[in-house]
Amino acid sequence: MSYSATMKRSLEIEVISAEGLKADRKPLKRKTYSVVSIDQKYFASKPDDLGGSCPVWKHKFDMEMPINGTVGFITVEVRYRTSGGAEKHVGYAKIPVTDFMGGFAPQGHLNFLSYRLRDEYGDKCGVVNVSIMVKPDRSIPVPLPSSSFAPCSSQAAANNHMWRPRTSSSMASTAVYGGGRVVTGVPVWCAYQRPA
Image 1 (cartoon, helix red, strand yellow):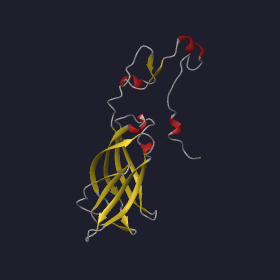
Image 2: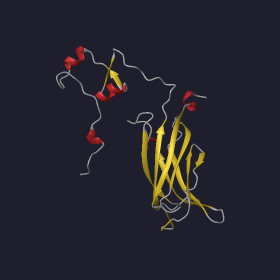
Image 3: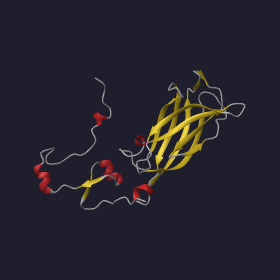
Image 4: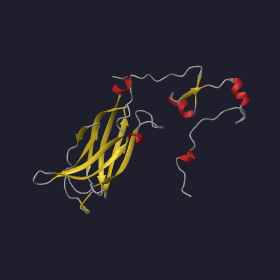
């Protein structure tokens, strides 16, 4: 068994609420509940007490997710039970793992996300609101700053995170940007680019 096959990350997922739930294109009046599935494991919330098309669950799940690339999505389903006890599906949403892991969101960052629910025919049937946090892995030590590293931004300096190798004086003298200093960062325009 490889090392990557056993690596898992702890997630805290809260299914907060849903909006505009519809069944057969009509506003839903039943008491609904949510089901979160990841890596063939399922976790269900309690039904919303008031019922209706805008349920509030605020139910938290602690889950383990393998990080070996086998899991690409977390699925959130909204269901209800009929008076006869039969289980009916309202809709589901697939949450890409890349929406809350990797990128620029650090461990321990709470992500608030909303996704369109779709029924079995692919029609829109509401929106589900969730929060997902990748719990910090205490077994991986955070490197402390040393004399050979410098912060890449003022916020990184304040938080003691995101360090990059310090440039030597000979490297800085050959650079022509900003009087011999190299700036690192993320361009803002790529995140907020307007359509032409």
